[in-house]
Length: 445
Image (cartoon, helix red, strand yellow):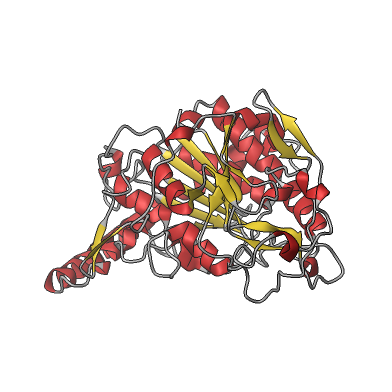
């Protein structure tokens, strides 16, 4: 098999029948508001202007951003109009006119909660299942559990528009072998996706291969003498992969090979190009692709002093609506949606009340006690809204799911048992879901 070639991750058997082969994760950095996107709460209009501490208990108002006061905040109704869309009647904000056309492919999880309302902690929790840095990313766990179906491309690829609050640690491999670290790709016309793909002047492919064989022989000899340094194996495999990328990466990332119709479907901004590239990667066997949107400056962080809630979310949705809708349509047309799990996520939601000390414009604070994410394809039920928050959008009250449950479900859809996917480190069997997590069977087709 091609995946057994030098430098490739061997394919590993799943624990159970997989519904999906690949994952495309769309991560909105900064905390997208569930109340302005997919969780319609008309009752907020009834309570508009009321103080949060007149409605919620002191206990309910604990645990938010410690830098912000919330007691004097006033209830803020949704700032956008909502409509029910598709045969499923899913509520979708006006800022997503294109995504509204494919809601019957989507399963909305409307009662997600997590452990922190701090950006860096929320991002780390979502990506690694832990609130402290240093643990493997979900993409790394997936490649560790399943290996790769391609020998010519990395099994885990990240495309981003900057460095997020938590930093690049959120897609590193932690204590797993180095081969499971994400490859960060750049998608810019006329520029290579990875550095140093071109041979230096005077270097031939044959000469390069000879040098690599010598270098790998020395690395293997040193590794065998020092078995406590497994990172040398990762270095050997990385060098082998780099050789292959010189031939495969340019083709995989060359969007000019797509038809004008497809490029028009996706659009031409950076997020759209990332979505189109993600489709090209999964159809070539890349196991896990993540797209970071809004990383620089936490573009989804809708405080009043950061552009204001209205402009913030209208602009962010406008930048991403076409690309992610096109991704679903394109995968479906090519017969890839059934085997590709598309996940839209963010580190947390936004409060149902306005910031007490707002500056100039309306804003909402950080909120981790109940928010929305969605999945499409990959074995999930389309046209489903699962779970709900209360009438204020404050707390997950019906079919509440923790981020650990979401992780367990993603792994299950890939054929992995989250309790069996472990790695022994410091005398403990570590896993993505720590010691928690239940598969959300209700959303699986």
